[in-house]
Image (cartoon, rainbow, N blue to C red; front, side, top):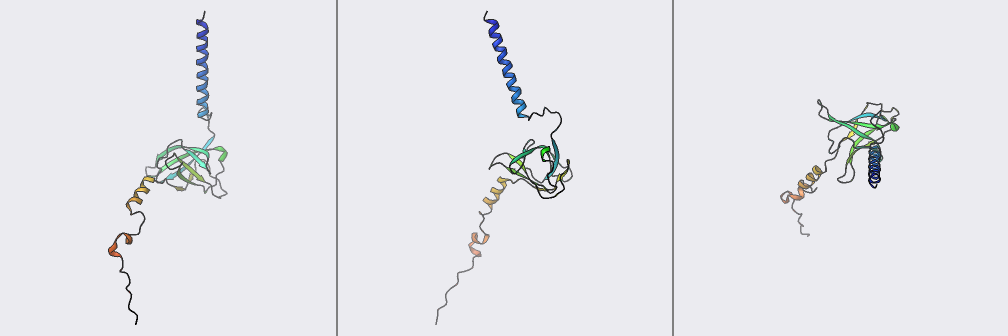
Length: 172
């Protein structure tokens, strides 16, 4: 009668594995279950977003306070309009908060960094952050440096533009 014991053990193992997967899924989604929302939305316009993707973190002083909810292109101005989902704990962000797109490390993930200002009037849900800084394209910067002569002034590269060395006149 080993059959029922083995079947029970396999069934228990499968239930334990399923419970583990469920716990992992809940932990990775912050236990929101898709119902309701513990965040509010702000918008920000950028001329360039680089490698920014939806669900990228939004940080203040290095601490995650939200995520990128959506990225769209404005059909009139052709700017990127980024929708930020900010945690309700940070609902009193000053009205003059600025946003920039940064990268963790040299080639890490992109994120949006917020710098709160000093305006006593807070941003309201749906407001737009007007002071923004676009992403820096490192490949473009390296290309400009490489093909611009390494930062030397043009006069140093062209010997024909140099003035002749002063000659000494004989003293009487």
